[in-house]
Amino acid sequence: MTAPLSRSTSSITSSSSPNGVGRGDGLSVLRLLAGLQGLPDPVAKADELLAIDADTLAGWFTIARRAAVWLWRGAEVLADAIPALAVAWSSPTPQASIAALREAAVASRTVVVGQADAADLACHTLTQVKAHVQAALGAAESAVAALGTKDVGVPQPGGSQAPSPALQQILTELTARLDELRGRATAALQSLALSLRADPRDPIESLPADGAAAGVSTEPRFPAAGTPSEAPLGANPSGPIPGQPGPAPIDAKNLERLQLDLQSDDDATREMAEGAMASLTQAEQAGGVAQLLVYESADTWSQGRAAISVGDISAADNVATLVPGITSAPAHMADGLNDAAALRAEASRQSPGESTAVVAWYGYDIPLGFKGGVSTNPLAKVDSTLDALDDDNARDGGAVLARDIERFRQWAPLGARFSALGFSMGSTTVSSAAAQGARLDDVVLMGSPGAGEGVPTADSYPRLPADHTYVVAFDQDPVTQPRTDLLATSISTLLAGPRITGPNAEPFGVDPALAAFGAQVVDASSNASDVRMPGSLPSPIGLLTDPVESAAFDQWRAVASHHSETNYLSGGSMQAAAAVVLGHYTDVPIKPGR
Image (cartoon, one colour):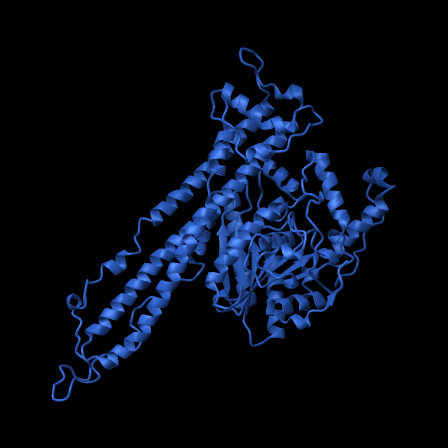
């Protein structure tokens, strides 16, 4: 008997392939083939990985981080008390005792933070693994569906028919991929378990049990009249304790992983690391301080994850997170970092007395990322291409972005303003993050194909008032028009059967520039001129497209000219975006929605 499908794997849409293989039957075919060959059920392997609850694990360690904050605050209170003790007590032992307690609190905090960082890394890895499992299942399902009935060739019990090489290859690749992902998940959990061996109570419990054991004197520095002092005045030093180590940089662990990846034998891993290193250098030149806030390795199935702050997030009054659109990849962040630096410079121009950090966040599975990133295998490229046809990756990325922003808040000063700005598919990701409870003061959706499934209005964001949602949509940009949804739906249906299940069948959700959506629509015009392109396609393609080439080229010209992150972060739209980042709302020009 085969194992039951999990809720995730059983939700794959069933439809007929033109070749006769049911799209919903692909995994069943692979399971049957595996069973007849005495191999483990690939779906059971996938279900085991999909059952991992990374969110609950992350929730536990959110509490641990709060404990770390209180330990740090307590250590600072003790540090403030040391000079006073030096003045008030004749014996050096009270000062030494409080100093030892402070050191123990700092050591305990270091253990807690290290464990929380290890948990964050494990949670990110586990979340990434689950996403890759879904992608691998979907890619295998699509590959089987593309085979003709005669090409499937699954043997029946007692029969002699052998499976086709193509089907056998699909099963082999799926099994190998799931084994690789299982290994990655196991390694992440083992690393976390190793970190948890340290007990944060040990530094404090190792202190002497009472003041007498510690040699603490209860004698005041200024004794009662007629009682001689045991120590001369001025015997106790004041000020900071020599040799006390300062806190490690917030990106220390990410930089360590980056250095390891630079030596990797895997070409994709090493190429992504080299790109991240070059991006860090670029960000440092632009902002003086560059911080690698997120880093996860690439491989032949994934572009990896990275986020680089232009400016010091730990000293910022304003923290803006900039999310790119399709074809972007962590291996090549130059354009995104240029835009981040330009936004930071504009914010500094508008408010010279405030410090702003802009984070270029390449932290979600960006569709068509292989176009600008490391080389991936053919199945991953097919899956990434199909991902550009709806908002699935944006919704998954929104959950990751919400968690990362929570992490950024722990590094930023208390009271810092947080905003998120997304371009194209990145805007759908930002909207999805806000819909999933991201703690943001403002969002800016630029060149948006839609606000995402389940976000009908700007009131859908539980922690963000509707009037703190800003939309920049150039009329010349066809990506912001309804025809983008129509085109994506048509292509998706043609390639893979119906995929859109929302009430309005919109693959990217509602246009946030509509008046009915209820956002603040920024009054800004495109900063670009139309691109001049040839009036006809080259032969022989042109022979097939003469009746429609004029309309097609009009659309292509508009996309090439007006739909770019740099265009949206230029001129008046840039000034408006910076004003939102600063909270200068009266400086943002608003117009009625569509």
